[in-house]
Length: 180
Image (cartoon, rainbow, N blue to C red):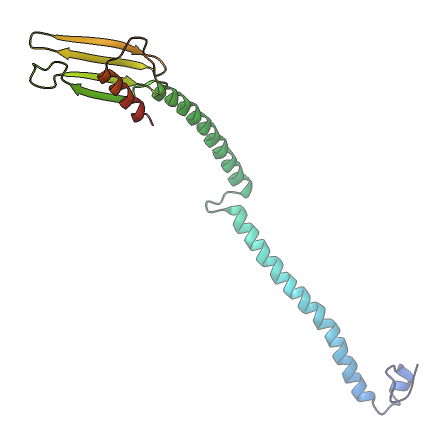
């Protein structure tokens, strides 16, 4: 080890004889103090960080009502299962309602007409009522001064097996268009 004033290493034997001895001791004390304070500061920072994390975890696990995080998650899972069951039930009800609405009369065609020239106004009519599948009825009337006749015709898949008058065909076309 060097023993000169320029050297960095001193032994206790040659340290006392050196003219830099008092400064070297102060320098060594500062180094020693730095070696002690740096880890101590790091430990203090880590301790503050751990305490802050502990408080955050404690707040999270206590919740707003003081429940544990596990209990909160169990309640969320129960609510999810309940909502999933209700959702499946609503889908089933929706399918039933869709089937029912498709079978309900949704298409309407109505035409008033005067079948005879000697009557004063349009007292006769043709009425077509259809569901989404094109099934329904066609009701038509013929009104004269002496009597009124009512006719009914079945409609299956938008077609009628009996012959239609012009007014009945117009009513059926109107009913088809109203379904769109």
